[in-house]
Length: 258
Image (cartoon, rainbow, N blue to C red):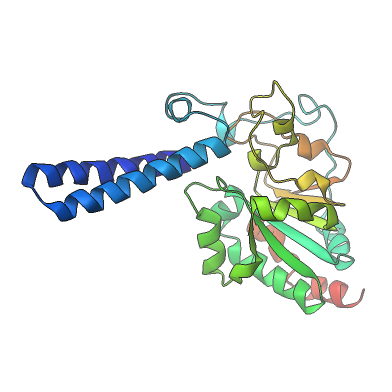
């Protein structure tokens, strides 16, 4: 979807430039050319981030999308460990460095304010909190940036993929909220449908928590190998409801009473 939106934006710029030629208006020609060129460049950058061609994105598809159910422990080659909200609270209570990985699930649940509240609670205890932003996370360019900015998340905490990836090895907890394909370690393995796609190195964190409604697959239509990692705990819940569990009085007492 982000690639399609960017491509359509490029087409609108091209149409404006062509209209400028027809009516002999230099302003329309220049403005349309700038919009068309910038949209084309952004489209190419995002297509490269998905390791796919623009034509393949427009006409093809990896799989069944979010509605296709993944089978735990089959294609991913392992079993899924389900955890409770209390288990996550304990992990966060003893963490010093936490990296939040937002995805489309966060956007659907409108959980950006809940994640900000959780981050504030952790920061009050001296925890270092950062946000890992993948260029194609969400449904449009800059989707995660816009949502988190709406929740007044400080801009310096939003880290692009190239900047945040080296920090996952030092993270005590990587908190994945609704992100799927952009965290799949299968991208590093030749022959995978997502082989070569740049991903967030979430699997290198010391502990991984994934908040997800179900084992449904992402756009790629394949199981996420991150979910069967020994370090990963799956909290099956709506993103907003799952995060809200740590912002009530009981969780605050657990955090402060470490």
